[in-house]
Image (cartoon, rainbow, N blue to C red):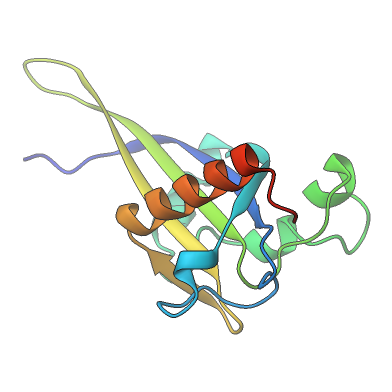
Amino acid sequence: MEEQEWDKVDIAILHRTDRGRFTGITDDNLGEVTVERQYAYEIPTHQLFSQRLNVEAPHRDCFAWNNNVTGREFPARRKTRSLSAGDIVLVTETGLTLGLNFQVEQRQTVWAVAEFGWDKLTDEQLQQVYTQSMDAVRGGAAK
């Protein structure tokens, strides 16, 4: 398989809404975690090369872009709070594979803000959180 070149990176910010918010997501509390999507943005194409090099966080400057410090960052513009432990950053990379047939491919990586740094979540863990979040909304659970 050819190496994929990613043409676009979309970021979605999901804030944790359950009683344990502001703590990291662990195996012990995963069954209680609920989230609510806050906003999304695209990383400009000219920044993608440097983004590919970062394997320790969702993207370079993720905390700086998503924490209200100067009033120009995403939380201030979207009128929401800054990233905190337990929040989720969903990274979706889209690219085109060249060859006999053009093929659009996507890769998704899920990051949880840890108490110090970042933790990766699996697709199964994200699906569990989504299901719990939908159940909480349908059941009218308090946030």
